[in-house]
Every structure is written in structure tokens, then in C-alpha cells.
Image 1 (cartoon, protein in one colour):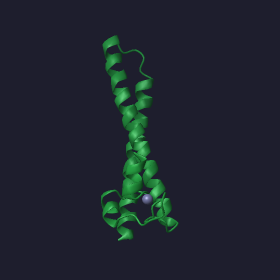
Image 2 (cartoon, protein in one colour):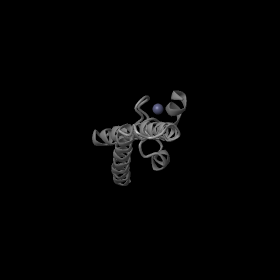
Image 3 (cartoon, protein in one colour):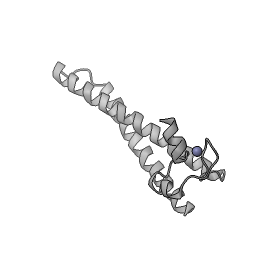
Image 4 (tube, helix red, strand yellow):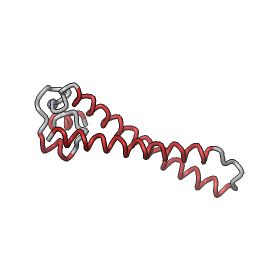
Length: 109
Ligand SMILES: [Zn+2]
């Protein structure tokens, strides 16, 4: 079961890395475009903001995924990072990158 989780996390890591590369490419391309007229610039700026927040989201997710993979490697993947209790396997099925048990995750919010 823990093998499936690792596979799922590795798949996620690849997917998120690809998405991040696309966002970064988009930001660089838009940044170089200064000749657009004012309304186009406004739309571009909006797009940039959307891509920017997506980029942050994906970067954050990726960080969690990588962190979870590291913890699995260290044999701690199923243990809550905060209280040391076992993380509910059902929770890990839904959130394979989780590193806190339900109780600690709720307390952290
Ligand atoms: Zn906990």
C-alpha cells in the first residue's frame, strides 16, 4: 500500500514540476512584451497575476509532495510529523502528501 502512495507521489511530483515549468515559461515570455497597447497590457497583467498565484500554489504543493517522499524514504511516511502518531491510512489515500494526522492538521489551520 505504501508503494502505491510512493508511486502516486512521484507521479504528482512529475506533473507539478511540468506545470511549474510551463508557468515559469509563461511569465518570462510575458515579461519581455512591452510593445502591447494599454488594454492588452492590462489583460496581460491580470493573466500574469493569475499565473503567479497558480505558480505559488503549485510550488507549495510540490514542496509538500517532495517532503512526503523524503519522509517515506526515511521510514516516517506514515507517522504524524507533529505528534508522532500514525496517520490514518484512509487520510493518506485521499491526501498522499499529508505529513500530519487529522487532529494536528486541524489544529494547524
Ligand atoms: Zn498528529
